[in-house]
Image (cartoon, helix red, strand yellow):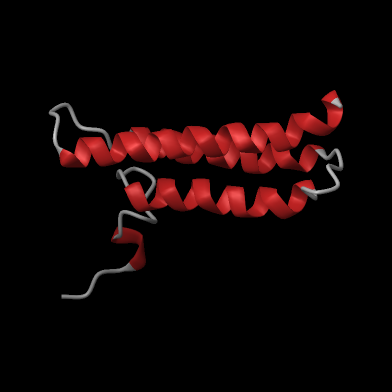
Length: 100
């Protein structure tokens, strides 16, 4: 049985995918770190793009949550905490050079 790439949940935006949400968040963090020039703290508004992608990944992770409590539910809650931490770090990279 062969499946096309468009039928996979990762590439289909109408289906829930925990992998897609986590990859968006971690990929945006990996892109935001060199964009910010971390040790030198150079101001750049290009960091709005990774911040938006991380928020989209957080929403995609939130879509995967289920009503009943289980270990899967607990794993998604941990992923949401990780997503919130990454979004806060990206926003810190974005706002820190303008504040100090």
